[in-house]
Length: 490
Image 1: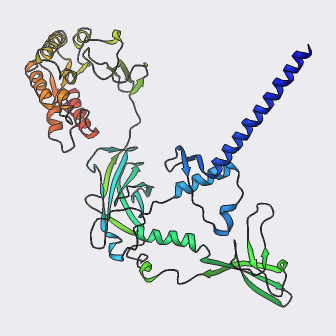
Image 2: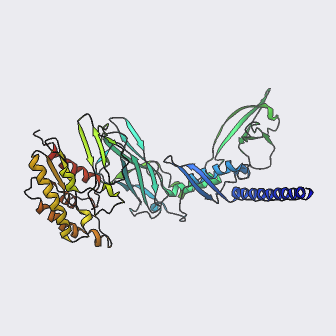
Image 3: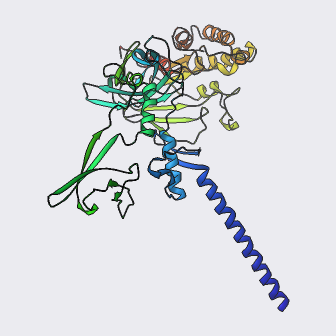
């Protein structure tokens, strides 16, 4: 029994020693975290929580703020805030005025200015800055402000500016209202001026000075005050006892500190800039000056409808389907599913592999029925005979459908051009797809179907070719499709 008791005591002692060791290691790690690297969680400019590691944060030694006692959480927060506000202004040495940013020579371009925009869409603007010799800047650091606005609606919104550190900036806007929306970009300060402002912030934090009036009877004195004061003269300590916020005044020569009556601004220090630095701060030249557009400076935004078409979530995989949507207001039922194999884009349950011809055989048809078919891209790697056989079966089913319900509308979307690289060319070249498109047109000629000519609509458009075309091209295709469904005369 005693042997077991001693064993238990020995085990407890070892456990206690282990816990102490673990505690010491954790404390050491926390101290290291506080002094070296902080894993920070904060909210960025887009409102998203961001977790990052902030290393080597530089603190201003002004008034001993770099030595203040902070908890690990407070230091983490401060590091995050300082890192978030850190501006990457390159140290390129002294820059003459003529090589600084000139807003009148700089310009911005609305990307996809002719694209289709609707309320809620994102608008992107590219800004290119140049110097007073009209030469492109090779570094960033300029402080730009950008907004979209509508005088008629008295509406406005700001943009998020991204500095690419090479003389180019991109501004992102969210289009929040319909109608004509104008874009404005301004240069608040050139990067050369920002460097001066940073120097003043670090080296001249007392460039605004304050004073207090001390009075007792007929005797009054005025002394300078601030968060901290230079030199070794006697001070009056007015640090707040509750918050610890520091505030000091030079002690009056004849009056006690308790005789302070007022606090007021003393003034601004003069002569802060050299002649060369002053050139970066000229009204009407490079302070809050507009940057002109190269091309249109506005876009038209169409309103977003309250959607009448409501999708039923069937839990189907993306692209595969089946999908189902209903518009009760207009008595519309919309169904979608992918065609049978071959299918490249994802895994499909075998019981969802429905061939187009079989689906057509199950449709009653009639004047209120519209069928849209698109079959081509997944056949580009096969011999042409494989595609011909598939279209032959589909054509038979279409002919049977139109025989039993002649007023059924059948629309076929053709192939389209796409972006090509060395690898894509081997699998989905436009040359392959052109052959498939030619076969489709010939096999359905005279059958009584409508064609949405996606090939011509992508080939003729100025936008780059894509396997899945940009929204403006898709809208054109939908408009053509709807012209077959709802012709003007009806």
